[in-house]
Length: 287
Image (cartoon, rainbow, N blue to C red; front, top):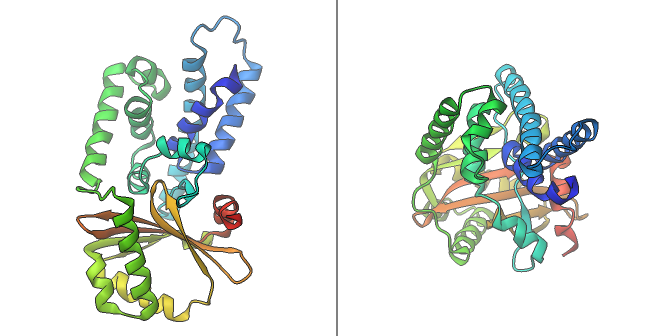
C-alpha cells in the first residue's frame, strides 16, 4: 500500500521541501515510521500516509529555518529538469504536477507552518481539519496560515507570466547571444529593469543575489568573458525555458532557469553546486 501511494507522497515532499534529495529522504523516513506502526485498522491509508510525510517535512523545514537564521542563507530549490522537446511520458507527468521555479523560490520565504498549510490545502486539497493537528493549531488557525501564505505568494508572484515556450526560448537565446558577444545594450533590451538574479554559491557559500538590469547585464558580460568553452543545451526548468551548461569533459557546470513576463526576463535562478547538478543533469548529458 505504501508503494501505491509513493508517487503522491514524493510530490508532497518535493513541493514542501524544494529539494529532490531531501524529499526522497523524507519519503524513506516516512516508510520507516509506517513500518513500525500498527496500520491494520486505518481506513484512509492515503490521508494517513500524507499526514506522516507532512510531519517529517515540517520537522525538516523547522530545522532548516533554524540553520538559515544563523547563516542568513537563502535556499534555491531543486527544479525539475527535462530535455526540451524530448521528454518522456514520465517526465511530462512530473512537469504536469510542477510549479514554476519563481513560485518555488517564493515558497522558500514562508514560515514552515504556513508553507505546509498552503501546499497541503491549495495544491493537494487536504482539508484544514486534517492539517490542523499536523501544525498543532485549530482548523480555523490552520486556515489563517494558508490564507496568509496565499497572500504572500500572490503578492510576490510575477504578473503576466509569459507561458509561450517559443517566446521564452527566443528571449533566453537573445540573452545568451548578447552575453557571449559582450553586448551590454542588447542585454538591457531583454532584461526587465527590476530583474533579480540568484545563484546558489556553488555549494560553498551563501546564495548570491543581484538586482536590476544594469547590474545583471554587467555580471553576464563579465562572466561570459572569462568562462571556458563548453556546451550549452536547451532544457525545460519546471516547464519553462532554461539552459544546462557542460564543460569540455561533459561535466555539468551550471543550470539556469528563466522567468519571463511582460516580454522580458524578470528572474534568473542559477545552480552551480556540483552535488546538486549531477543528479539533476546526469540524464540530460546523455541526450
